[in-house]
Image 1 (cartoon, rainbow over the protein chains, first blue to last red):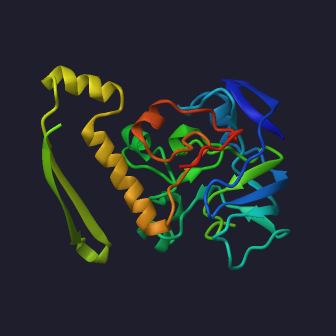
Image 2 (tube, rainbow over the protein chains, first blue to last red):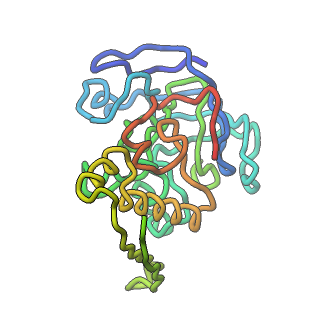
Length: 153
Length: 95
């Protein structure tokens, strides 16, 4: 698929990258129909956010159509549904998520330790927003993998 | 590596779930030099226990280990130090 990739500060390029695949039972794959360029993408573009790598797919505000679902996604979501994806990736099960504080989900950031080192507390994983926020591929692409789909879109 | 330890589960204050406390005593071969080498290669027992506790919490609470494109194997110090780009994997290695 084609995706907008971060190359270096002030340098992004549309490149051919592998299509996303289901990695976990609660994942969904979304064919993206619209994606936004956010003001906070400028922080990444200009190189103010650390822990970016060459080839990172950008984009954290996107919507689309579900094309594939993990085996544990049973209720509510179906192939073909049109969905809006919230940018914080939230498990829905931890104490923060259950209080509605999805942006500080305690489970969705696999790189929480480096985020804690850098900022004192780790935020949730965020699509296309540096490796401090988990290193998730973003939504300025043709397809995206959405983890914890049962609690997100 | 000789070691001994305990894992304790206690209810957290204010109804905020369960606190898991791991205590581990160990002797690192090679003393300070050995500890330094282990740390550099992501084999420091403290780092490994922190990773294990995070993954344990993820599995207990969500039933799965959070995987991203940069950290496809989930939380581990080694992987955090050596991230792959945040773009989908050609051949996902899950496990």
